[in-house]
Image (cartoon, rainbow, N blue to C red):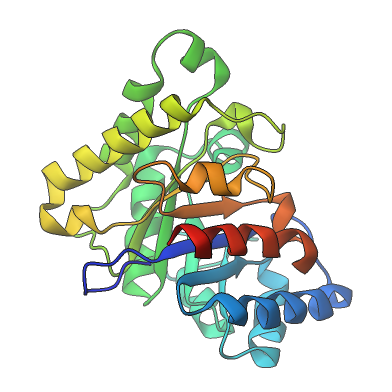
Length: 255
């Protein structure tokens, strides 16, 4: 996350998705121990399944752990859902909202995501709002319009750099090993930055914009050298310390 000195720290967040049981707590501990080696220049976190958050935070109280989604309501008749207050109660300090797998699989709208982000902030959580286009939208020349519209409609009006980050994840690159051209990433991150600055002024300059979509140890250095790429949202490569460490090392070198 950015600090107030004007120096942007790299922010690397692992998203474990629907992976992990109690047998994986030792790997989470290994990741936390390894991540401490880079804490002078890199902020790191893992967004875990809700079932693991309490046990992981009890084991690792100093490491940043988060959820992968939250409901916009504090409580109520929402079977199977988890509120932001519940995440905070379990020990989480941040959450993802609006991941493309939820936008598509659970038909979440920008208004839903905006409500979730607002609820998470009220509960005291930091928030990462995910945005991104499909391959069909990119091929149709609509990628910028789609993503900027998502940013505009998903980000609450009271957003600030001390609690909100954006993760740009081209849907077609998630888990496929494919990534956009450097120029495409630079164009998208630059456009998101311009919109954030236009809307939030100086604070928009220091909101972290992460890249997600098949970032790994082989391409992390290249991606984080691109202007306005302030870190990464990492999927499969965050499941083990061995795969996660090269990304943190690349982030430290580029910070």
